Every structure is written in structure tokens, then in C-alpha cells.
Amino acid sequence: MDAVVRGDVRTLWSVVFIDMTVASAIDADVLEVTGDQAAAQRFFTLFGLPPS
Image (tube, rainbow, N blue to C red; front, top):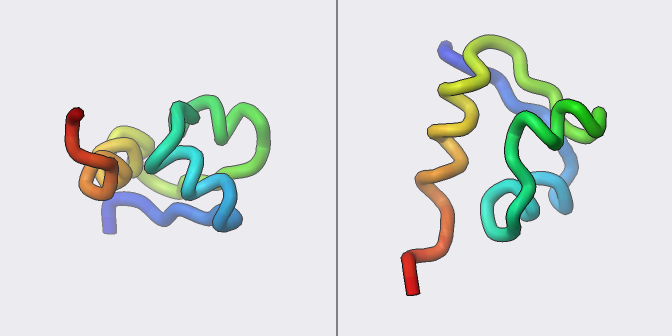
């Protein structure tokens, strides 16, 4: 286990599809990451929209 991520749907959506970073979500206290924060950031890049 590299990272465990906890947050609500709106926050997860914002990190994946909008412009919220994992760090800013953690700072806003709407996302909790246990473990490797860089691994959590990499995880979210797997689900983004393709470049236009």
C-alpha cells in the first residue's frame, strides 16, 4: 500500500477533472492522504480527460 485517499465525490471529481491539486485539497481539509502523497497524485493522473 503506497497511499490511502479519503474524500467526498465532489473533491475527488475536482482533483481528477478540474484544477484542484492533491496538496490544495489536503490544505483545504477536504482530502485525507495516508502514506505517499506523490503516489496519490500519480493515481489521480490515471483518470483525467485526454488532452484536447
